[in-house]
Length: 312
Image (cartoon, rainbow, N blue to C red):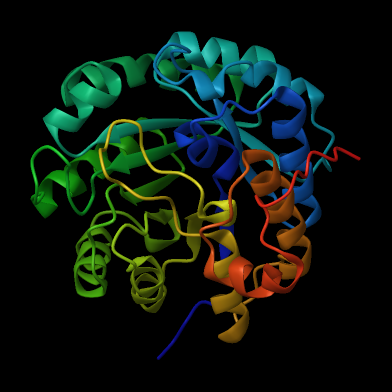
């Protein structure tokens, strides 16, 4: 068995995590969360998104969050955008990276973006031109890579086609998302095996939700295939507003614990990561989904059982 010697973790909690919470976190709380995550050693963080505030009200005032944050210069803050208008807002806010998101199925694309797959790529082509002109790196997401909430099983070739199109547009990295968390290790392995026939493994990331408790096993299977970039969310927060029943993302704490135990470097301090867990779960008023956080913090009372709004 061969695993990568080092894995890059992309923290998506401040965006993908908080966007599915009922509570809308204040700007100061969102900014402080990002600062705590950076203190733990995470240097690629999705800070928010520039999408319709009506559709995703939890991401309102992302520009204010970005202008409030104080993090080291080597921390790259990214924002999710659906079109060139979102790109303009993200650039004005000073992001270091933009991310675009396409779906492997027509149904999910219509629910998530309000248009079909081909139309979404027409919009993305405009973003590509703007990003190149601005010198901003662009990342791509493929939703429903292992299953769709509306169409069920997804043809692997459709996933590959969407990923190839994102890569061809200029995305330096493509993140494959198991949006509804139905994947299993063998399915994840098959996905990576097929994908690497078209895209270099160094340009592939994985983004697993833990609906059926398979996320860590799926990640391990992908690590064995050479994948070395993993998306995760602090405290296991998240889900998808357009995927009914989808549970949260795999928890960053659980991923770091597993990788530490495997001798794989991440540059992330687990104890400092738990400071971020305490903070955000205290403000959300609920305990973390992370198994590691529940085990480590049980003796002091789980966050969410008391107020934890300290922004210092």
